[in-house]
Image (tube, rainbow, N blue to C red; front, side):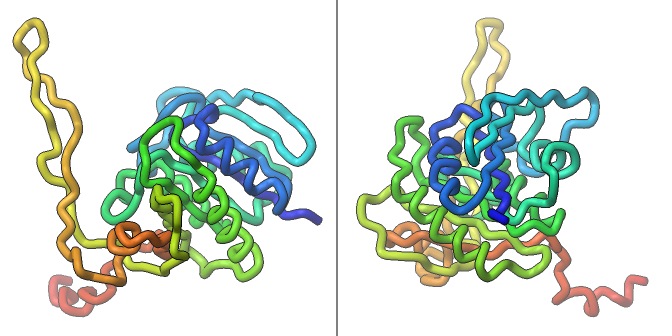
Length: 251
């Protein structure tokens, strides 16, 4: 039986990145795409609870079925696994995202929200992003590494509760893959302020990433800056086990 591969994203079902990803994965198995009907960037693990979710079949061909969904990336994963697919997928791949999801961006990313949701369901899951925001970006390298890493995960699996955060530099020459840690840092200068015609303040999200460990050669930001594909194993269990005993006296 061919592997069943679920594909989703946060840029929308018509984005170039998800088309490139689906095409790259078709040789590995039967691909079902269920993605938002429009951009849902920055949704993290948001879910839809106040309105119904609508799903539409966009097209169907040999080895590929494409659906759109009015919900979030996580909604797409939930609906696909609970209602659409005839069995649990062997692999979930979310992307290819337009723009990096390295470092702290994993917390905001709808791409990675979907991958983490896959891990919750016990599905081997990957989120993959390209460090370029342009709609006409070249996804050749990202597609190639998506397939390489997907093959490895299908063959070797992942531990329970773990998914992979993969980022691909927008470079013509890539040196290879590095298994990394998530870079410590945060976004600063996060808003641009303007005024509307009624003189009310308007704030536009922008900002600069402040890297708190620029010389850490084990980090994903270092890998990307030096021409490597970064792979960060990420987990759904956010417990800080190292301090549990130190605060036990609070009980």
